[in-house]
Length: 184
Image (cartoon, rainbow, N blue to C red; front, side, top):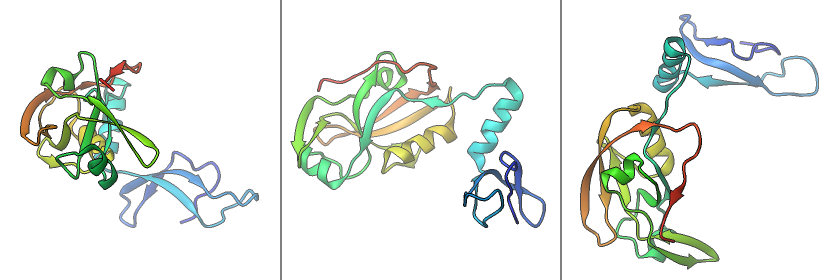
């Protein structure tokens, strides 16, 4: 179906009349007309949760763990001598945040590989709330679907290769970015 200028924010419906997305924008050809390409934000469980929060409280609250980190890849794993080849490497922790209170460990030493610096020696998160995580985006998606106030089990691989299951109670993401520290 055509999406014209001015439809942004309107519903995208399927043949059965169910809302499956929110129209976001259309491709611009320089002419004030539909050029046949439009973009919509899909409606999924997290979108519904956001809408419900906005309707109920007028605010959206996102789950927050209180870490800085990055996706473990082959280059980082080999350069840092990591004991896991996938997951999220914890680089820094927010003072008093859920991760620090749960006992997660941040980076402790800097390594250089192929012209890039990495902070390694911290825990590697391999699962949270029973969901395996291979990347920072998967961790963020899991946090978003879990929500603030929930207590979750976080499985980590420690720098010595041992594993630990830690309990963390997720909080709401602060409105201003907190200071995140590491030993690097």
